Image (cartoon, rainbow, N blue to C red; front, side, top):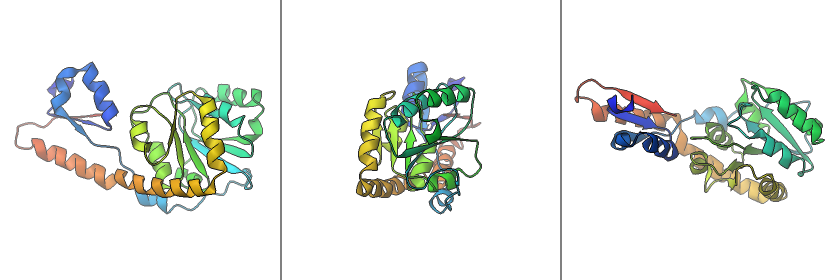
Length: 237
C-alpha cells in the first residue's frame, strides 16, 4: 500500500524508523509531522473539583486506555512504595477489572481513583501535581504532551517516540521498572523546586506541539507534491 503514496506523514522519528524497517522502499517519501494539541485549552483550563480526592497529598495522574500497550501495573506497583500520594487514572478498557484487583492486592485501593472516561481531561490535569506516562510503547504520547501544556512535571517510560517528546523537559525511566519509578517520584515529590523547574520546562516544550504547527506541516507537505499529478498521502500514527 505505502509505495503508492507521494508522501507519507509520520508523527515521530520513531514511527518513521518502524515504517522504514517494515517497508524500506518508502524512506524518501516520509515527512515527519508531529501531533499537535490546542495549547490554550490545557494552559488555561480551570482545575476540576475532585471532592473525593485528598488535597493534602501529591496528586499523580495518568491518562491512557486500560489495554496491553499501556503499563498501569508498573505504576500501581510503584505507588505502593510512594506514601502520601494519590493516583488518578483517566481512561477505561478491558484491563480495568484486573488493575482494580491489583490495586486492592497491593493495599493501595484507597489511594487510587479510577475516573473512567472524562470530557474534562484538561481540568483533571490542572487539578493534579505530577503526570506519569507508564507504557510499553508509544509512537508519540499525545497525553504526555497535553500534560506538559497543562504545566505538569512529566515522568515517562523511556520508549521510542514518547521519549523524544519528553526528553530534556521531563524525567524518563526504564519501561517496566517500578523501582526506578519509585526513585524518581520520591525525589520529585520531596523537591517543590524541581517540580517548578519541570513545570516551566513542560510549558516551553509543549509549545513545539501546537496544533497550528501541525497544520502548517501538513500544508507544506501537500504543497510539495501539488503539480505532480494526483496527490495521495498517508498518515502513520
